[in-house]
Length: 110
Image 1 (tube, rainbow, N blue to C red):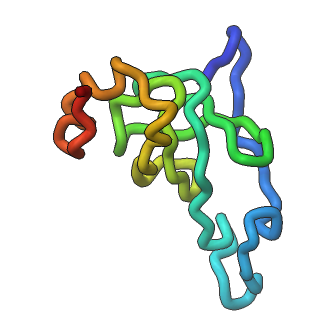
Image 2: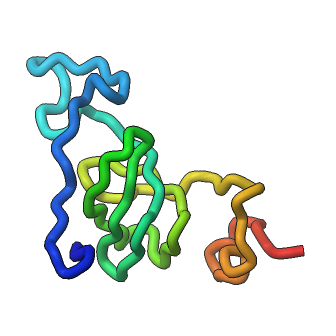
């Protein structure tokens, strides 16, 4: 993912900051078995710059949930978006409900 011409890598995170209970012997050594909610800041085709609730930003693979637009909420595991989170209805934008994925999810515009 590039942001402003510079390559941006997914930041290293502390699993404890997300409330994960992970013993290094019994849990996942790669990601702590944690799925993290993020917001899309800068969408792309294969990846997107996203921000978590702590303000950490990084590249997230979005191939499984495309298309994404700025403001979409995603659930990320191991640096890959694995699903969409329900939108904040107050934050819905007209272009969001015009997308085929949103129509299929019952989020059509009024």
